[in-house]
Amino acid sequence: MEIIRRLKRNFPDEMFIADDQCVAETLSHLPGLARQASDHPDEYWQKQHSAIWERISSARLHPSQASPQPVWAGIAAVVVLAMTLLFAGSASEPAKQVENRNDSDHELLLAVERAVQIEGPEALEPAALLALEIGGGHQNHSAEKGNQSHED
Amino acid sequence: METILTAALTSVRDQSKVTAQTFDQLMRLHQRRVYRVIFLLVRDDDLADVLTQECFLRAYQKLGSFRGDCRVDTWLLRIAVNLVRDYGRSRRNSFWKRLVGLDEQRADSKSTLVAVQPSPEATLLAREELKEVWKALDAVSAQQRTIFLLRFAEEMSLAEIADVLGLATGSVKAQLFRATATVREVLRKKQWR
Image (cartoon, rainbow over all chains, first blue to last red):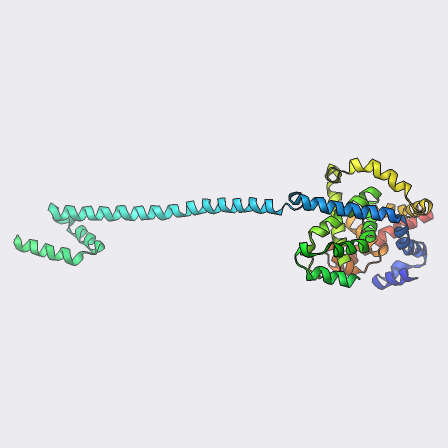
């Protein structure tokens, strides 16, 4: 029997001992049984065929019901945009803070420099020099100081 | 015919360019087999009818995704088996019945189907015999049942079944072994009773 030959090809021989003749017979009838049990007249298949085309036509008329992908794509796009904006906003915040802190330091140094140049105590002179160095106007300022000392 | 249709489907990437005639041929060629596989899995005429319709509707909608890496009938059976699986998952919530309006259709279609049976006695007898196998298959998992029926009722190769279910051939073989052993045991017990 074809079915036994096929089963033996795939499984160990001990599965197919003589007392399984009945099982093998049942299995060998299965394709025929399945065909007969699901058999219908031509009218039935024609009716089903027409019903399928009807459903295809109505799906064409209402594509949103048939394929929800565009809706999901829209939702996904909005979520991605919102996340991008959210993270972009929070990422730029620390940079601004650092910038502000640099500005305030710079202003403080300039203020110290001005105070020292006007009539500051001698103890603050190193701070003034540092401020000059950072400000980049070291040469100009030392020249001015030299002139001032000559005048004194 | 099968090869021509596969070539026709793979050569056309745009769904709108697949002619209605090509799809119609495809449907006529595989309609009965798709219905039979679904019927064997769900054991209900009306439900098999509705799921067959749904299967071809999905196939039409997914024509663009058919890459031609398998046969058209394998691709169709993959859709069919997935539909049956989805139906099984959502059966408790009656999701499918509401979706396809089966509750409304059921009353009408039942009487029509019974009236147009070609040989009611033969079909009834076949179904009675099939019931014994179905009963024996109740003892195995849904996946093992599917594998068993595709193998012995549809006479598909292990590789084809693996393709339809998206499993490795070895896994199909192992599950078929377990299912066959269980069915053997149930049928043998029944015979000796």
